[in-house]
Image 1 (cartoon, helix red, strand yellow):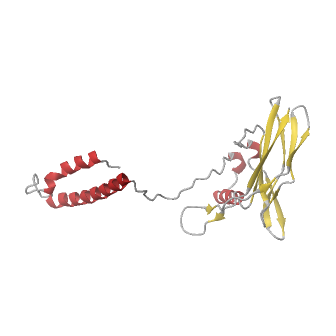
Image 2 (image 1 turned 135 degrees about the vertical axis):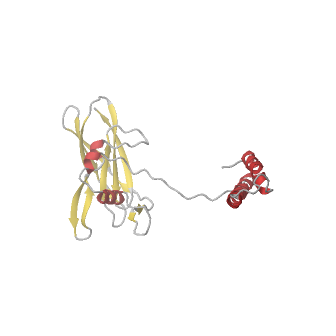
Image 3 (image 1 turned 90 degrees about the vertical axis):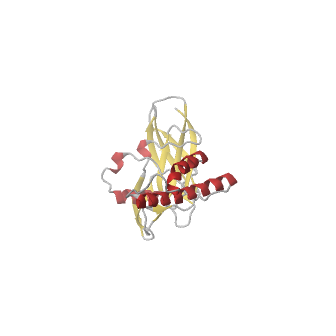
Length: 219
């Protein structure tokens, strides 16, 4: 953005053109005047902007929202086309597909609440455990769970899905919804550390709702 000092310098450089000095009988006089006119218009635009800023006027800015959708392991989608992957992301995060012009794939509505009763734990070996999301369901009418992620070293407020459970779902089919994906609510993990760890589960539904529940496990 141009500031006052920049405007003064440019005006000084344009002064000879403004008074027709130093151009004499130049064959390029017409082109020079065209450039001068264009620059002068830009100067007026910048001057107006600076005046507005000095007055403390709030200028309009685009309403842009960036949502973090996740990081997905390449091997999980090696045989998936771009269109299929986009459809997965839109479905998983409850977004509606964009049918209008533009580059946006879809639009996500406001989130809805989901419910997870608790995390059930079963010890399978020395450090090998099986986990299950008990009484997990969607509270939305016509909603169902489409994904279930697990974090085996959960830090409060920061959910980081284990790479094996970023995408945990299976195909299902019924009369109401036809063929669709539903979340797999079980997981198994072998820990490398001992002591207390916090395990967290996140479920997501087809309408952008999600919920997280955690539990401390003594390894």
